[in-house]
Amino acid sequence: MVDAQLSKAAQETKARARSRLEQTAKEMRKHVITAISAAFAFIIALTWRDAINDGLDRLLQDLGIVGEAFIYKLLAAVVVTAVCVMGIIFVAKLEKNSNVVPQLE
Image (cartoon, rainbow, N blue to C red; front, side):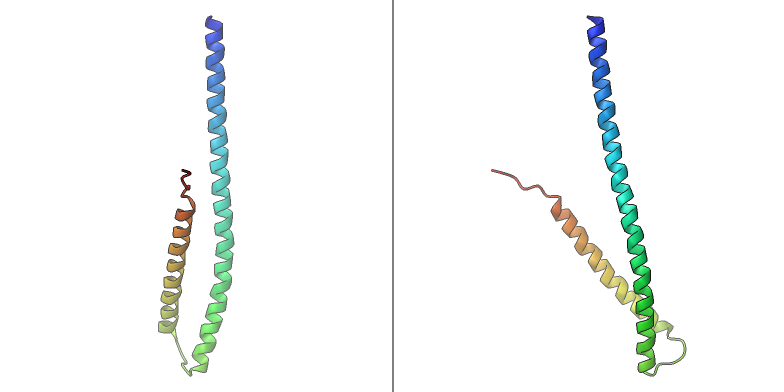
């Protein structure tokens, strides 16, 4: 009787440990994917930074604005930031809506 109870308790403990291990593995996988995606996004951002800087420099030259164009680069940074924040909000809303599970009646 005692052996059966111990065996059952051991099996339950093993099942709980396996479940926790599987959950931890899923979380780790999710975090690794997020980190890799962030790294790719950073590379993309650096590439766009160069393109935007070159474009802004060319635009300022075409407009005849010479010298230090700090205020224009600052304005461009504010505009890019605003657009990116709106994009983040949009994507966050999409993610929030995709987690909704439809109810079957």
